[in-house]
Image (cartoon, rainbow, N blue to C red; front, top):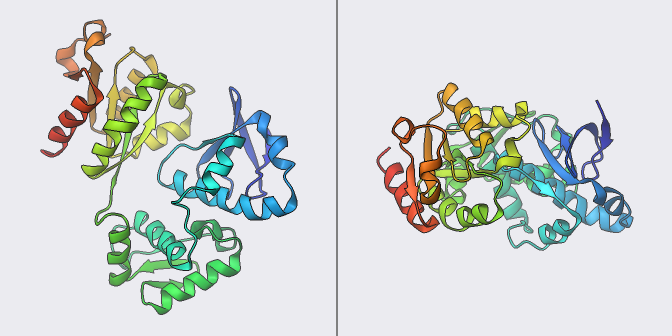
Length: 298
């Protein structure tokens, strides 16, 4: 297997070429996961000055880890790096960085007092968007003194207070993972991102958008993420075989699937509509309302 150095965490890991991108697998930016980088941008990014790397790369590593931990697919080009650096959602204060650690523990536990192991801790300062381990340790001690967490070596637990604080930062409730399967259509993805995904979040789900290119290789990592999801929404517009495959796999893993299709493609479906009973829609706004009504009953 081909191996290459991750620019952002400096770890040499397996990579998987996919079209114009390389996927970096299980580096410290995404333990147990992966992210993709435009192959032609690697040398240009590697050519940044030492000072720029020292300031920028820890932020990019932290961004990748947070997004992939939230089951979001991360695909980067050189143009994305400054956008991430200047994004207002990137934490700056120690308090906000500590909040990121609380949210990480919240995502990985079912209640206060449940143990979460962070290993290796020495390579996990990207959990708090920190530039080094020293700042992470300081944040951990601050949260411990505030009685928000309990630490025993590399094992961490949210206290009752910590759990409440993390829940508040997450909008008061734990969002359930949800995968949206679309054909590889940029305009379709844009419509869903603007109108449908925010409505799903209001219904208590954390939606991740997988278009056709996201599942085209049927790689084990994609299938594992789908199997661990709490809900799949499969849109059959444009009749993508990959959407059929991924949704069928989800059904085989007993993951609930909601089918949708744009009105123009309703009569072109490869299976009879009575077998899957999709929501038929004309506009993304209309579909968002239909899904909200459906999910409010579950």
